[in-house]
Amino acid sequence: MLLIFPPVAKPCEPPAGIAKLAGALNAHGISCEILDANLEGLLYLLQQPQAASDTWTRRAVKNISSNLAALREPHTYRAPDHYSRAVKDVNRVLVASAKAYHAIVGLADYHHQQRSPLRSADLLAAAEHPEQNPFYPYFKFRLTDILDNTVSTRRRQGREEYVRKGQRVLVGSSRARRGHGLDRTGAARMSILGTTLGHIRVVELLASGTSAISVSAACATGATARPAARASASRPVPRRMPG
Image (cartoon, rainbow, N blue to C red; front, side, top):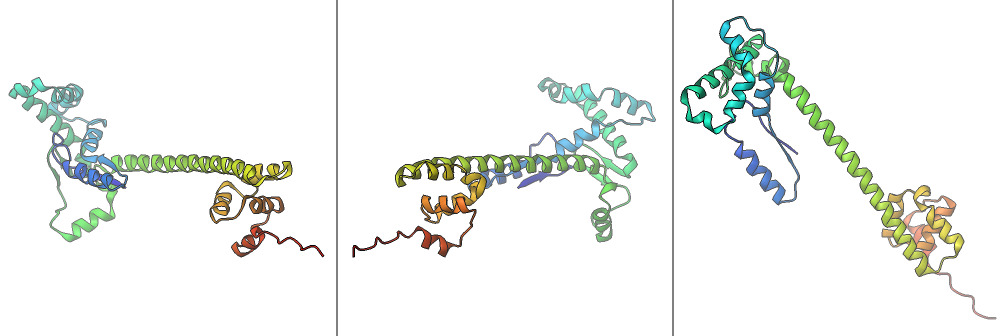
């Protein structure tokens, strides 16, 4: 589960809502991830090349790194003039970054020059054409990266779980061999269970109550008997009474 805090809101205020929601989910055993797309999206726009057409914009673009660093330092907030100049220059870069999208982006606001959030037609048009949003390139890259990493992580966890199951089968087969007194032939058959039936299949057979001898026989013949057949195969054969 992915919890996203979208732009635009004041980046100086951490998204407490999704943090509290994530804590509640984790407390109930539900894993989730948090994405502060507001802060990341704004930083993404500030890092893009800008075509400056005036002196103020050129100066703001040139000093964007130093202004961002200043806003991360406590002493900047003790100098109102320095703080005000840094904020105005950062906002100037954001305005320039969204100009081609007919939008005005700031550190605490977003406004589209041709669409209104109060008109349903404009909302539908925005949904049908997400590429017209200045944050679209960021979301396209970031969400794809998160999903790819999630899929890779789950595949790796699946392979690790598969290996763990296989290890449990080998340990279980070793104990079963000692308990049932299998000879060397039976031991050899048990050792190839993982390649004949697959580790997961063997786990299912052993978990269903089938004895290790029956599983070994199924492995040797390559059979995947039905539960009833396995039950009958595991039933001990009565000895013949002496005549």
